[in-house]
Image (cartoon, rainbow over all chains, first blue to last red; front, side, top):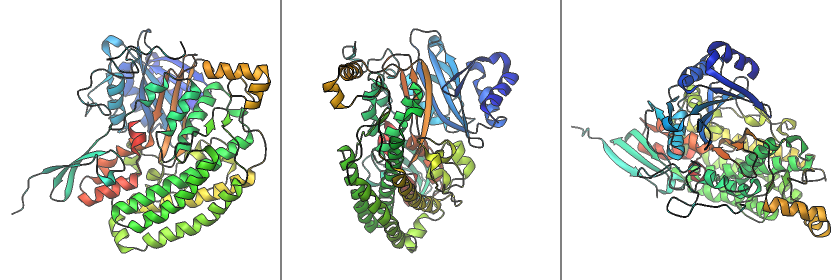
Amino acid sequence: MSVQAAVDKLKARFGDTVLEISEFRGETTVVVKKEEIVAVCTFLKKDVGFNFLTDLCGVDYMGQSPRFMVVYQLYNIGTHTRLRIKAPVAENDARIETVSGVWATANWLERECWDLMGIAFNNHPDPRRILLPEDWVGHPLRKDYPVQGPDREPYQGRLQ
Amino acid sequence: MANLEIMTINMGPQHPSTHGVLQLVLELDGEIVRKATPHIGFLHRGVEKLAEHRTYHQVLPLTDRLDYLAPMHNNLGYVLAVEKLLGITDAIPERAQVVRVLLAELTRIKSHLVWLACHALDIGAMTVFIYCFREREHIMNIYEKISGARMTSNYFRVGGLSADLPAGLEQEIRTFVNDMPGHIKTYEGLLTGNKIWQKRIQGVGVISAEDAIDLGVTGPSLRGSGVDWDLRRDQPYSGYENYDFNVIVEDGCDTWARYHARLKEMHESCKIIHQALDKLKPGPILADAPKIVLPPKQDVVNTIEGLIHHFKIITEGFKPEVGEVYVGVENPKGEVGFYLVSDGSPRPYRMKIRPASFINLQALPKMCEGSMIADVVAVIGTLDIVLGEIDR
């Protein structure tokens, strides 16, 4: 099944949940509502064949609303196609349902996303930090976290 | 009367066979592992955060330090992602493409040699270590001649290569890959028929194809479970579609199958290197994109355009258009991917690395729970993890 067919199927099944479809350099990105993320992922895995979760991460668009995007990179081992799913997450409610029940891969990736980006995953089986110590304060990959650490002058950048 | 108490012990992060700073908390029932909990992050350097504060050219040296046993593959994944973001994938000259494949495969052999050496050493076959490192030293010398560095090569550039291959090197690589199959035979002679080796890895660390896919395992670890998937063939990059090679798939699902898969992969890499050397023709090594690629030094000192471009690229960098790309390459350990988000500025807005070892390590508890404590060492070896990439 081509990516276009997969996207059409997704749109036919979920309708209003699909917020935006875009293409850049031959890669298709679908933005969906975060409330339906588990249903969308389950559908893509079971009915469309995206059986492999390549990667999962958060992106901080500070200054925009909603502030965060959770990005799921999917791969179909049968047809060797890729699809990117994104779900917007608001700053004042930075949480989304876990997809670790759909792909076990998501377990550690979601822990990393929580650890570094501060997006919590509801019903996660093991919601601990993963790379940083348990008593670490803050989430370093957020744009308002200074690159040289919170206890120093904010980094101005060599190019500014 | 047996003591049914569960004992919790700590393995690492200073344990010699955890391949770096990996800590495993093992819950043991006698010698049986009931639960294994990996603790990682001791080597976290914040590469993704640092990348957001550097220009695209300046990020490249950071990628060497991820999987430091296969630096060329990390360079390759990153430059391919940036080239895709810029839309200059088709503008890369033929010679640069061939040299990239050539060195990527040489790196695969190098990485697999470290895997075999350490895997065998962990299990007790010490001699193999010396043999493998002898051959690895040859590759290190080749690396040094090409890039000046033995490990962190930083050789590929966005748009091509940093320099051409030194004269006479092609013959040296040819001699090396001619000898390599004989060396692999030596390793097999030391291990494959060895009863202790067989007993230690046959039926150990079993993971089914379904579980491996569910857990996101990639690379030889996945192909050892019978899944026929290799990005070099299935989503070819850098001209891999022009090479004739086999994707090695083994059905055993155990450490023994993965051992054979990696050994055979080294043979396939030799085949690809021979083909790449045959294809290697003189020609440009950088794309014709003056606003992206650093000009040759001669142009910088002799022409005003060269000087301006050099100055602009060094002080400001280039600005890709707004967008996002993901590129995955077949690293010796599995799929390494770079997800780049551009906001139109000269620095990546967000760079997410898909680390092969990080995700493969997640399968470790599944592979060693219920087996003997001595098998944990074999499972760590067979997953071929490198902590620089796990912790980033």
